[in-house]
Length: 226
Image 1 (cartoon, rainbow, N blue to C red):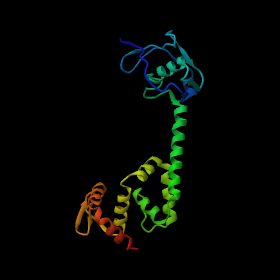
Image 2 (tube, rainbow, N blue to C red):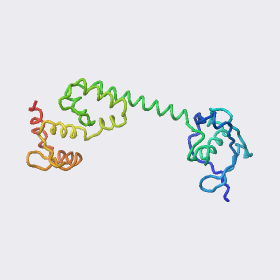
Image 3 (cartoon, rainbow, N blue to C red):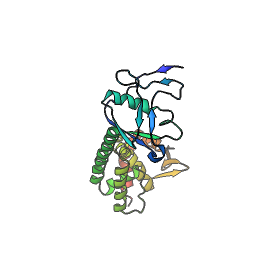
Image 4 (cartoon, rainbow, N blue to C red):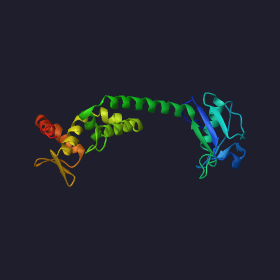
């Protein structure tokens, strides 16, 4: 049997919450040496290398990763073959600092996306809504705007990627031209008049790029249709 106490690399800051899934049923659990799922003996040691045995008697326990002994306890517990990695885990582990930072980042990105959405008006808003996959056919502007806001709030990463996409102007032309019947799609193939543009939006964007001299007349044709 192989014995190991290799230290894994991870963020050494944060507050980890260890929560019993069913404290009334589980009662007390004891953390000590164990054999992991790969057959290695995992010794449970403190920061001085001394053996440890820890009993969990509360439903919730917090471990401070800036404390070396508590960090080693976390490293040992997170790979436990029964308590954490078993088919019916007894405890759940979550890093509260990481979760808070991720939540803040998501909220801030949502705010950025909502500010972009707020500045969109009329045709510009409708054009971008189509890029997001929002149906705009026979839908009043306020409903479209509401859906754009929802998209910005719930999927801010996708929203901002779509907004910052250098091909966004070409996508907007493509989808607007499709709605106005300037471009036709038959059997998933896009056409401008009798000219094949491509069999996917990516191929259409390439075609528009390669035929940039036609864009002024295409835009004029699209905008002339109410």
